[in-house]
Amino acid sequence: MRILMVGFGVVSQSFAELIMNDAKKLDREYGLRPRIVGVVDKNGAVVVPDGIEIPKLLESVRVSGTLRGDGSWEYHEGVSSMDVISDVECEVMVETTPTELFKGEPGLSHIRTALGAGRHVITTNKGPLAVAMPALMELAHHNDVIFKFSGTVGGGTPVLDFAKKCLEGSKIKSISGILNGTSNYILTRMSAEGVAMKDALAEAQKLGYAEADPTYDIGGFDTAGKLVITSNYVLGTSLSIKDVSITGITGVTQEDIKRAASKGNVVKLIGKVGGRTKVSPEEIPKVHPLNVSGTFNAILFETDSAGDITLVGKGAGGRETASSVLRDLIEIRRAFAR
Ligand SMILES: NC(=O)c1ccc[n+]([C@@H]2O[C@H](COP(=O)([O-])OP(=O)(O)OC[C@H]3O[C@@H](n4cnc5c(N)ncnc54)[C@H](OP(=O)(O)O)[C@@H]3O)[C@@H](O)[C@H]2O)c1
Image 1 (spheres, rainbow, N blue to C red):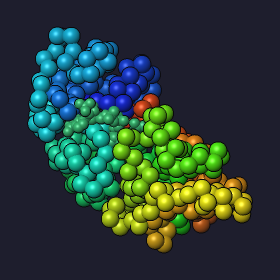
Image 2 (image 1 turned 90 degrees about the vertical axis):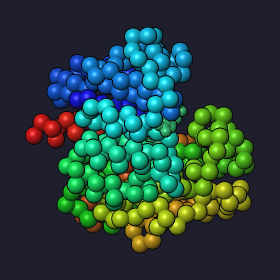
Image 3 (image 1 turned 45 degrees about the vertical axis):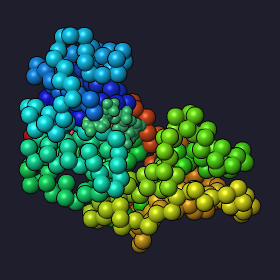
């Protein structure tokens, strides 16, 4: 299985480490022998058709912050990712560039090009899916390739495939969830310690949970993107992020938190499909299964025959999200083997 990595940051480096450390197990249990034949980031690329030595790759990024290496491969400085995607022979492209939720770029062009060239694609990047998921699914179908994106919702928690595979035969009536760890951390701190919103945000940024620009997280956009992906994948809708009514947590005050507490409730940022698709701060009872604390994510599937089922897990993290990329790769391998 020849893999081209587009983007080589936190998630991709963890993925490279995972396939390196588990190489024997992957071969023994799944007949999977992944070989990274190309890596491209914003600054350049390395292409080695026989497979790049992963320890050297990780060392290069650690020491120099680039893919330049120690001279054992040719480094193509300044080469464009689109050229690499078109030129490098591979079976699978793993796309992990930064998320942009309104145009979906650069991931959208990367994924379109790879699917169009007959490559299977795995991505953890929500942007292209939030903007153009139905078109991308159609393109994959048309080219007879597999398009997987487990890591886009729930990090390592297998939200999408759980709903799709494990709930077969049940009708899912609604989906609601806490899908953004940063917002949940802030609301948890506001409610547990009486901290003001701006102090809780500063704390989240200091701990590395929130970006310097936290708009996507606290504005509710990240939750909306994940909701679109979940609804389209699980319920077969054709939503884009423009179809979601979005209110973030920026307007939530200590007074709101205290008023909710006086009724035995907590304020949470909830994304919900089933009726109107929306993201907004809502009061839920303290004993509700979605009342998870800190950076945890939770998603509740209301079904007709299996009752309500809630999945709880870490919604992010390099290693956790890399595990979902690996799950997707194993699924592609299985499809190959048929
Ligand atoms: N980290 C998590 O816990 C997590 C969880 C779920 C989903 N995700 C999503 O997964 C994706 C990757 O996350 P991450 O944390 O690994 O991000 P990251 O550490 O910021 O890595 C992004 C990588 O993409 C590269 N890149 C940027 N623009 C590019 C371009 N035009 N062409 C090629 N490469 C480009 C960057 O290169 P430079 O270093 O040269 O800028 C970097 O190597 C994001 O979309 C994120 O939202 C992350």
